[in-house]
Figure 1 (tube, rainbow, N blue to C red):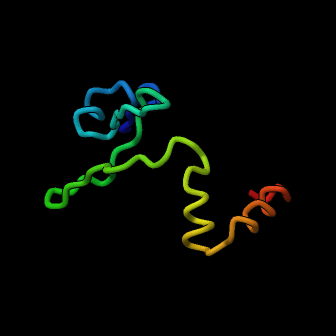
Figure 2 (cartoon, rainbow, N blue to C red):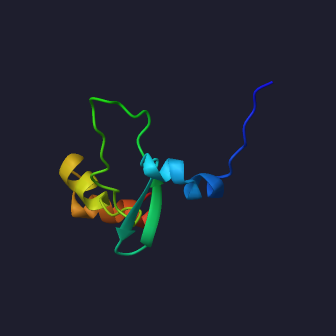
Length: 87
């Protein structure tokens, strides 16, 4: 019979092997402080992977750009959607 340990998230985050293989990547966020995120899977020998951007730390940070620039909604339409509790 072959078996191994069952890791918790805490076990994985502290495991030297996971850390050495960049399976747990740590970043400094201006609002959240240090955060840990999963690395890329699978690891490919000829294709390097890199986390270039974590995304915004505030939900809705890009709402105006999406609603106005991409969807073409006017300022009045946005206010109506906000007043109706939609956004």
